[in-house]
Amino acid sequence: MVKHIVMFDFKDENKSENLMKVKEMLEALMDSVPTLKSMEVGLNFSDEERAMDLSIVTEFDSKEALDLYANHPEHLNVVAFIKTVVNASKVVDYTL
Image: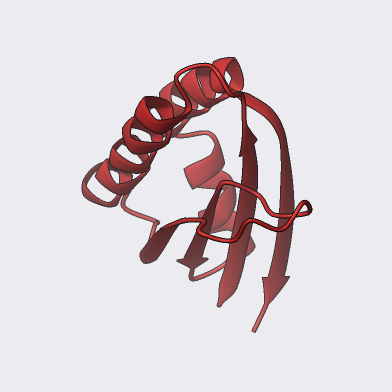
């Protein structure tokens, strides 16, 4: 089992709308990417300076399954939009 976790720091412009749009876009991937076993999308409520705005926690059967997700056309469409509305992101991938 592989865990893939990403955290995003969103730009201030249209932040609330973009957070909701990205959340919906990410959650829709569950219906279109067969190798994606589970996904949690969380919106941050912490006001700490180090806090990120949105995180995803996903699970895959293998590294190969994660690679298929990473290169899936629907995922690439979401990534393209995310790149326009975030300042930065952080990722961690590990096996269980």
